[in-house]
Image (cartoon, rainbow, N blue to C red; front, side, top):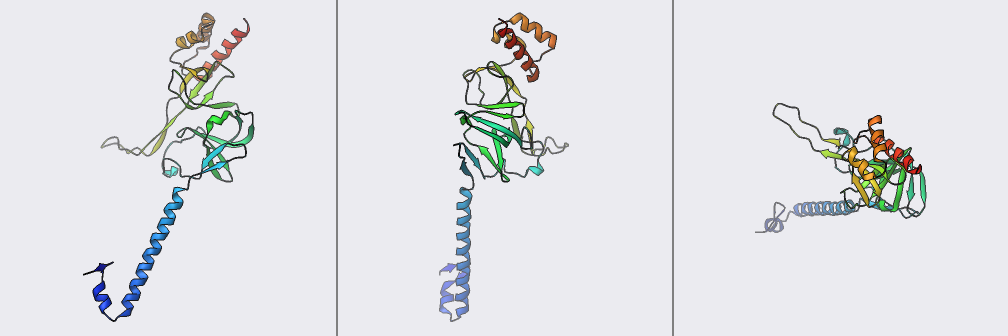
Length: 256
């Protein structure tokens, strides 16, 4: 016996009650309409993320859902270096420049975001960029290095080479219960400890594990640099202080 959607079709068609046939027709039409609407929705969702080509050739990806896909009103911390957008300048490898763009650095996704007409986009091909300047801060994208496993956006503290660079990251942690008698930790972003490096060229980067190692890598003026580091109480974990040491090193080099 044939059964469809809870109806006995043999009994249905043997009966002379055409109302049941009409009712079944509308049920089937409604279900087909629903399936068609679902197909259209899924098709549009797959193309929700989009890439926008700017006149300068730079591609921005945007329009997609943020990651992780949760409402940030219910999580602690932030994925950004600064939550607000700040106007900055983008300098390209071909010499072109875009000025006064609202920018912010997403430390979790390791990408710069850009706002236009209340829509947020992300720079898709950072290798096209020479540097990004926001106020007195300079950032650039490091593809790869030879000796140290570091890539992505870094902050540069000195002009030219050698220079101090800082890699900043933020990690996302799901809600978790630490113990039976402790409060459950919420969904949260946590800033990882910043890592500082000496960059000698775009392909030569050294980890700064201690002041002694940094001075040895620089090679010249070891005595003067050691005395300066002790006098100024420079710490290997403080990029502002490392910046002072590099500036002093460059002064000594110019005096030769």
